[in-house]
Image 1 (cartoon, one colour):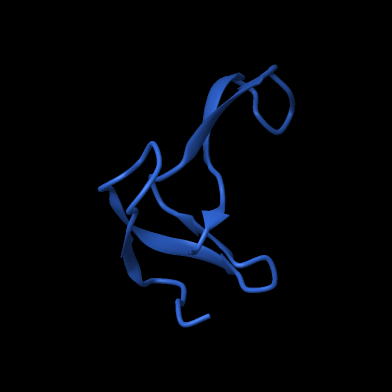
Image 2: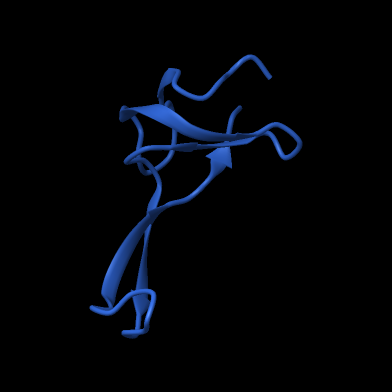
Length: 66
């Protein structure tokens, strides 16, 4: 895989087509990357010691490099 953390990439297909972002994390074995601000998922969480406020948390999810 020729991509590294910090590279800027553009999504060419899917729901986030045309978006650009910087790579946060690379998973070479599974051929996936996480890009900041792209492919976000909403997760509902209850208040806990780690997250005292709770609510909806946006998280960037990995997607295929190809």
